[in-house]
Length: 205
Figure 1 (spheres, one colour):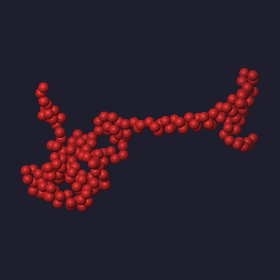
Figure 2 (cartoon, helix red, strand yellow; figure 1 turned 60 degrees about the vertical axis):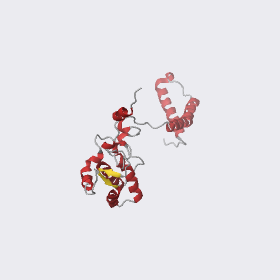
Figure 3 (spheres, rainbow, N blue to C red; figure 1 turned 90 degrees about the vertical axis):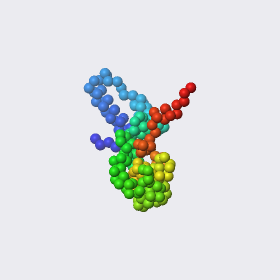
């Protein structure tokens, strides 16, 4: 027989009623009588209370801080190596054992030694001429200079020059530059030695 139901509650009630009647005909008095008021109360609870409860659970979950990865190269990351932009641009080489700039340093060295270094360093004037070949705005090149001139002496050694070229390439590829140079990009000869610093700053009692 075709039946038209007003809503899902009617469907459930008819289904339960028919199933109970069918079982009653098979098992007789062994099957308990159907309590319609109880069924209606349960149905009402499912339609209202559960929805409210689920909304409360979602709200509580939204207040929880995101799970962060701790330790190693993924410190402070939510998604580890699968985070957006990880391993690209300025973060490339963050978990590598070698200095990522060294992979192209032989090319940068060829340019460096054409700029007439004095005592292993090129002047700001000569460095500027080469850096401007990138056609990046002066404001961007100024930022790159500040990041690359690690010892703030107004000149660039071969590692600092290679770093400047690396940062120029990052910018040309469309990535943003950091406000401070990440640890993994600091040239090896400019990295602080914790042991040496401790010995140098040690004072005897």
